[in-house]
Image (cartoon, rainbow, N blue to C red; front, side, top):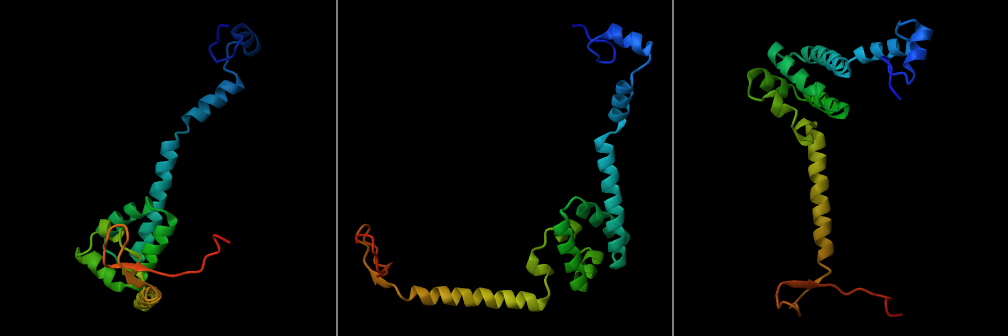
Length: 167
């Protein structure tokens, strides 16, 4: 079958019905084709950068830092943006370091959670890690040293445990 000018499978019928004018379907296709998804995506990105720029300006950051940081944050996940903005609010020293150029915006967006957390939270995390390590080490004390029967290593450790595998 030969296709008509508008993609219809019957070009002659299309010409008769629409008298050579484009059909409603063809007009819809043409108007939808004009909506460029990249263009709307870039509009959303620019709008997000503008909103983030306003938030960053309220944090007393320099204009050039605001522009660079807003551009980087607009391309991050919402969770990461919230985490970074909260860390910026908790640590005024980060604002000073960004403004002074000691901390680059690219480095700021890659900061770990502990660098952004409140000092009390960092200390609590450290204590929890130490407690977990001590607990793990104390449970290892239940083992005893033996010589490995396979490789002969003298620093091998063994444990006794009840098993019902052969019952």
